[in-house]
Amino acid sequence: MARSKTWVDFPSKPKWTPPPGAVDAHVHVFGPEAEFPFSPLAKYHPEDATPEMLFALRDHLGFSRNVIVQASCHGTDNAATLNAIAKSTGRARGVAVVDPDIGLDALKRLHAGGIRGIRFNFLKRLVDNAPKDKFIEVAKRIAPLGWHVVVYFEADILEELIPFLEAIPTTIVVDHLGRPDIAQGPNGADIAAFKALLDSHPNIWTKVSGPERLSPMGPPFDDFVEVVRPIVERYPDRVLWGTDWPHPNMEHRIPDDGTLVDVLLRIAVTEDLQHKLLVANPERLYWAD
Ligand SMILES: O=C(O)c1cc(C(=O)O)oc(=O)c1
Image (cartoon, rainbow, N blue to C red; front, side, top):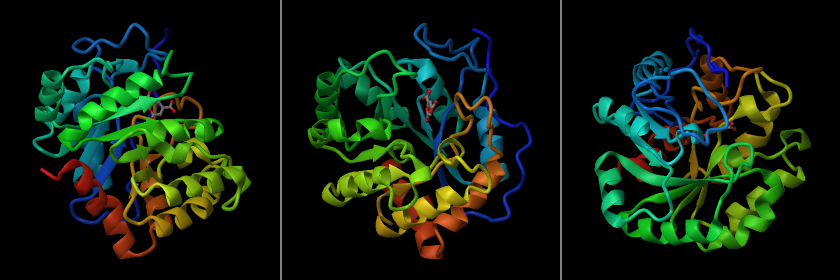
């Protein structure tokens, strides 16, 4: 498989400066492959996106901290993610992908390495299977650690996932808004179903990320802003935000990360909302201890 490069080398400087302590709460690292090989089951083969590159981007964009989410191309071996957290001098925490049979000792080692949650991925183009029963078992095992669950799914399976989500005893964070069809607009069926989920489940949060993936219009993402600003205002204490650098699989519409930061100002329009989204909310999940 040819190696793919899915990020721009010199993103623009955002026009806006995030508040002190701001967390880019959804990023990944890839490799470096020579040290941390990709999973044999990986569905894509990226170029190296190293911790040093991530930290340079963090500083360039004006963020203080990162949450590094284990990318599917590294399978359940979290060594590359842990390496990046270790190199961050306390400025990164992480979300792991684990073999659901993982034991308590291994979970405690991940905790010591800065992991505070586990991710369940339901995208068929990224993973071969997603065993719900096993996921529920391991979700119950991480609950006493104070961790949460991150779930990545697309809008077409939201309805069928509800019993599964209800069996998870922790906070749940839905990646990229559960990938609604943004073209339906702010009152479309997909986003209405998603709001109904959040309204009836106070433990469910979402990342208001991914304009580059979800917006048919493209930059400056007016369609995304119209749908997502009401979400930030309705659930101000249950939203996180991230660039999603290095943008796995975005080979055609690779975003400028500076432009993504400027979208923030338009979805979180007061200082209070910005502080919750970028500082207070991620602190509660990732820097509580
Ligand atoms: O939509 C994607 O392709 C994607 C992939 C991954 C991953 O491979 O982990 O993570 C994301 O947040 C998004």
